[in-house]
Amino acid sequence: MKNTAGFATRAIHHAYDPMSHEGALTPPLHLSSTFVFETADAGAEMFAGAREGHFYSRISNPTTDLLEQRIATLEGAEAGLALASGMGAISAALWTILSPGDELITDKTLYGCTFAFMRHGLAKWGVTITHVDMTDVQAVSAAVSDKTKVVYFETPANPNMRLVDIAGVSEIAHTVGAQVIVDNTYATPYLTQPITLGADLVLHSATKYLGGHGDVVAGLLVGRAEQIAEIRLVGMKDMTGSVMAPFNAMLILRGLKTLALRMERHCSTAHQVATWLEAQPVVSKVYYPGLESFAQQDIATRQMVKPGAMIAFEMTGGYAMGKALMDHLSLIMRAVSLGDAESLIQHPASMTHSTYTPQERAAHGISEGLVRLSIGLEDADDIIADLGQALVAIADKQAAPA
Ligand code: 3LM
Image (cartoon, rainbow, N blue to C red; front, side):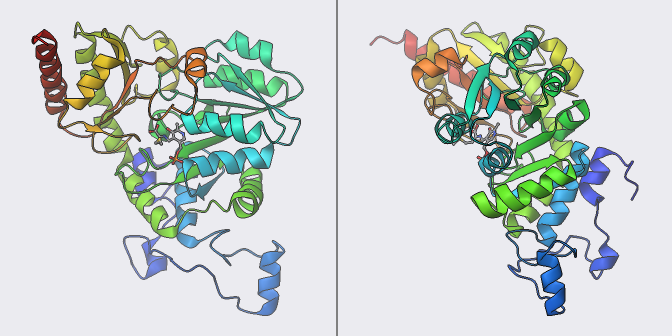
C-alpha cells in the first residue's frame, strides 16, 4: 500500500502485510513479555542499541509497534509511542523533556488530571508552570522567554471547547526554542493534525475516540523519531513504566479502522444536537465550534476538518437545572470519558475538573454550571428526543406545587 493512500486506507492497512504473518488478515496479538536472543552477542547488541528487534515488552512489542506506526502515519509524524494511558503519555513526555528550573507555559484550561499533574507533580519538581490565555496569541507572545522549554495546550480544550491557533502559537514558541506539545484527544487526527501545523509532539488519550468503544484505557504520543526514542527509553521505560499492554494495542488498532467513519457520524450528529440545544429557551449558552455563535469559528474552520462531537452548554437555572436534566436522561449515560459509541454526559466542576479548586476553576474559565456532552453514535433523533423528554420532565417538576 502506498504511503500516499487516504486516511481511512492507512488506518486499516498501514505497515501490515498479511503474507508476512501466515496470511492472517488481522494482525496477530503478541502477548510475549520477553523475546529470545539468537545468540548472546545479538542480545548484547540489542541492549547497546546497535541491533534492531524486540527484547522486552516494557520497551517495545510487535503489536504495539504496529499501532505506533499507524498513529504516526495518521498524525503525519515520524514516529509514535504507545503508553498505558493518556496521563502516562503526558507524564512520560514532560518528565523526559523538562528539568528543574525550566518553565512550562500552558493554556488556562486543561483536563483536570493534566492540571493536577502540572500543579502538584511538575511544580513540586521545580518546574515553573505559567498559565496563559492561549485563545490570545499575543498573550503567548508576551509570556514566552528563554526559560520557556515547553508550550502545552489542548484544542479543543476540555471541558469548555476553547480553541488554540496551533500554527500561530507554534511559530511564537519556536522563536524562543520552546517545544510545542498538543493534546489532540478531542479532535483526533481525522479532524486536526497538529504536527503538520508546526507542533513538535502530539498526544492522545486513546481511551477516547481512537479506541472508540469504551473498553480500554490507553495513551499515544507522536513526534520526531529521535525524541520519541528518548521518551521511550527515559520517560516510559525508566521514569514511569507506563507501557501499553499488547491486548490494548490490538483494541486500539481495531478502533482506528473505523475512526474515519465514526468521526463523520459523531460530527454530523453533534452538529444537529448542538443546533437543537441552542434553540431551547432554558439553554443559555452552547459551546460547539460548528455553531455561528461560537466565538472562535474562524480558528475552527482553519484547523479542524469538522467541528468535532464534544458539546458544552449552560442552562438558565445554573447547575441545579443541569443536574436535574442529567438525572432525567435515559438514553444518554451519566459518565465521564468521551468518544464512545454511547452518548455520555457529565458535570466538569464536580467530576472531571474537581481537581481544580472553585477559585481555580473561576480563574481558568471553567464555569460551575457547565455541562459536557460527548455525542455518541446513536441516531440523532433519539439523542434529541432523550434531551427533549428530560427538559419537559424538569419543566413539569418546576411547575408542580412544592
Ligand atoms: C474525561 N479525560 O472524561 P487517560 N487528555 C484529555 C482527556 O480528556 C483525558 C486525558 C488526557 C477524561 C477522563 S475523568 C476521571 C475521565 C484531553 C481524560 C487523560 O489517562 O487515558 O484517562 O487520559 O475528560
